[in-house]
Length: 418
Image (cartoon, rainbow, N blue to C red; front, side, top):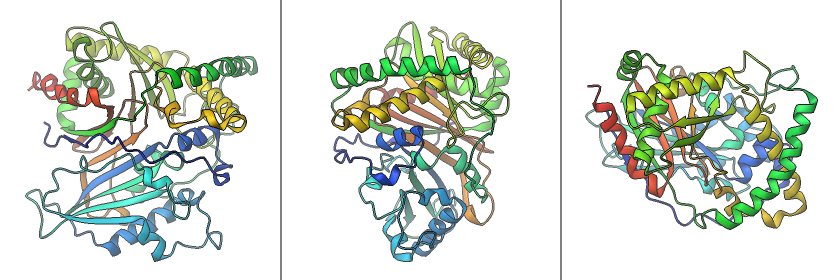
C-alpha cells in the first residue's frame, strides 16, 4: 500500500562549490570524500504533538548530547561548551502549513546550506507544523533532521531514534581484511584509476546536478508476506522492486544487467574493511535483467547470496584506496576537484542501502510515529535507502530527473500480489 508519494522539484541552482577547510583535516579518507562531495543524510518522521521552536531547540541539544561527533568540525570559543540557544536558533526552521501529506517530499534533501556557514554545526532541523489541530491521521507536525554524511550515517539515526547515545571510536582492533600485498594492489589500481576518473568526470559527467527526491511507503506485513510467498528475503524483494521498476523493461538502465552497489552494515563475521569511522561497507551487486518480475526477484536473491559468499572486502578496499588517492591529488591539484567530479557515477546505475529497523522510543523521539523516512543525497548517484519500521517500510529515492517518474512503477509491480 502506497499512501504517500510525491517528489521534490529538481534543484538546478546548487550553491557554488566551497573548498574543504582545515577544519576537516582530522577526517578519515571516507569522511573527507563525503564532505567534499557535499553528501547529506536525513531522518524524517511525523509528530503527534505540537512541535514548537522551543521543542526543536531541545531536540537539537539532545542530538548533540547523544551524538557529540556532530560537533567535531564545529569550532567553539570554549571547546566542549554546550551550544547556545542563539546558535541552535540558526539551524532550526519552522513553517506553518495546511497539509502534511506533501512532506517529506516537499523538502529538498540536497541541504547545501549546511556547508555555507562555517560558524554553524553541520546539521539542520526543519519542522512543518499544522496551523491548527491535527490531520485525520492524528499528526500535528513533521520533522526533518538533515546532516552532512561525513559526520552521520544511518546506524546513528537508528540509535538516536531509540534515545541511545552514539559512540565513536575504532570499530575494531583487528587488521583490515586482505593481505598487505592485496591492499598494495588496490593502492596501485587507485593510482591508475583516480586520474582516469577525473578525466572521465570532466568529459562526460552531467554539467548540472538534477537529483530529485521521492518517497514511497509500504506496509511491512505485505513485504513480509510477499517475500515468504516468493521464498526470498525481504531485502531481496525490496531491492528487486526498486531496481525492476526503475529499469522499466530496459528503458531505464539496461536491457541486460543493472550495475548496483549496496551498503552492508554487518561487521561481525569478518575483518573490518572500512575506515575507523563508518560502520558500512560497499559491495558490488550485478543484477541480470528479466522480463518477468518473479523470475527477476529470485535472481536478485541469488545475486545477493553470491555477493555475501564472495569477497565482501574487495569493493570497499578499492574505494578506500581511491578516496586516499583523491585526497592526495586534491592537495596537489585542487583545481581539478570541481562539483562536476562528484556528478560522475563511475558506471553504477544505482546504489542501495537498508538502515537497521527503526524502533522509536525514549525522550528523544517522544511523540514521533511511523512511517520513518531516512535516506541520503549524492550529486552524482541514483540512490535508494530502505527504512523499515514495525508497521511500515519507506523507499527513499534520490534520482536523476529521467528516473523519478518510474518510481510509480513499484505500485503496479506490488499490486499483482494483492
